[in-house]
Amino acid sequence: MEYRTVRGGRGFLAAVVCMAACAATAPAGDQAQWGQAWTRNMVSGETGLVEDFDIETGRNVKWVVTLGSETWATPTVAQGRVFLGTNNDPPRDPRHKGDRSLLLCLDEKDGSLLWQLVVPKLGPDIYLDWPKAGIVSAPTVEGDRVYVLTNRDEVVCLDIEGQRNGNDGPYLDEGWHMVPDPNKPLEVTSLDADIIWLFDIPNQAGTWPHDGAHASILIDGDFLYLNTCNGVDNTHAKIRRPDGPSLIVLDKRTGRWLARDNEGIGPRIFHSTWSPPAMGVVDGRKLIFFCGGDGVVYAFEPLTVAPPEGKVETLKRVWRFDPDPTGPKENVSQYLRNREVSPSNVKSTPVFSDNRLYVTVGGDIWWGKNQAWLKCVDATKTGDVTGSALLWSYDLKDHSCSTPAVHDGLVYAADCGRMIHCVDAETGRVCWTHQTKGDIWASPLIADGKLYVGTNRRDFWIMAAGREKEVLSTIQMDSAVAGTAVAANGVLYVTTMRKLYALQKTP
Image (cartoon, rainbow, N blue to C red):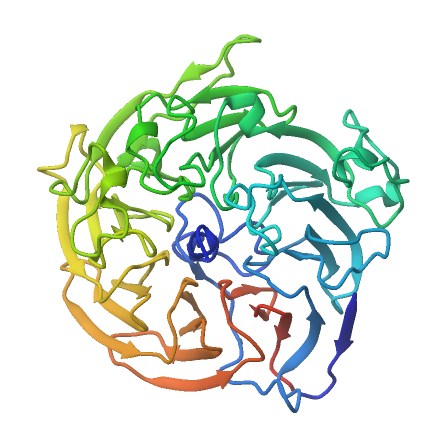
């Protein structure tokens, strides 16, 4: 691990960077998941954040950490620690050689390494676990527990202290988990993660991940909700596990599988199931919102009590909304590479605000049509609401992988056509657009009256949030920006492919 303190101054990879979660205006402090609370709205209550910085001179840079060669993840900041997924190139621990995926636990004060979770690749088929991609899911932290989806599509519950306070169990096979079969297990050291429990989604729930596993785990009481990443195989034309679930619920204390959807989504998946769930309270009723790999938006009743041991319940659907009702729904593989006609899918996270759901949806970035939209849906209805719940639809320039942010009567969205959009939340009318230098896979963050977002061409934009367009600064970063900016405890965190920057105003 290399870090320094500065004083004074592909496939699923798009889905990886698009999700953002925050309460409508989250309180200042930790950022304990990819965004905060249930609504998945990327708006932070932090104030006093930077409006410009210089990575060459160190102006407004608190510290910077060198990461792997590819970093697609977004950081989580909680309990004095920063958690971030990356790869093992170069190794931070000489025991681990070759392509490995990592979750780093860094000290929030200076970026120094506290411990790391090291995970081998899933297997020889690169379409199961894309080379060099690393762990791409942002963890969710609650108390002394860290929940994250690994590159092997495993849900792991980790001790926030790592192995520094011993191997707590009941999971005690960390030495085996760190190495690919059939190698001998490694000795577990204080630098290693402490796995409390592990749920292997492909083997225990019967799914087939594609390109890589990505989720942002949602916590509601004792329940964990997440997408399964079920998808196509290496031919991109076959669903190996058509009966596998798309949305599952686990017990956060034990990892026991409690519930699943039963919507028959599998055969209609056009690529994979990368959109994490959101939650909201609709007229006093709590609902789970989920975008399937078939491009359809679903609302489910959440669990209230765990089912009996050994039983997996079916989540009860409240409504379904098809954002692209004229798009193909059967034999979807025949539309591969068709840029004019194809099914739609959702790589971003739906955002809930004031009984409305906002979602970016459209053709797949690699395999489908270019057409994409920002949709606003009335979340109060029931049944098949495709013909009745659409409040407005706004055309995006190109495919979109980004989660929208809703704040002060405006919706901010970004797309792969190098465009930032500001739209009136009530009517869907455009307020302004802005052309960037590169495609945008990250999601916009709204904080301290500013919009923060980076692109794949290294340009990072800081703009004034509001109905009038104003560019505050543009910074050329060291490498592409795929992760979403995060604000926590007065610091803005910006991740590039190779580095993590902690940015703070210099007195």
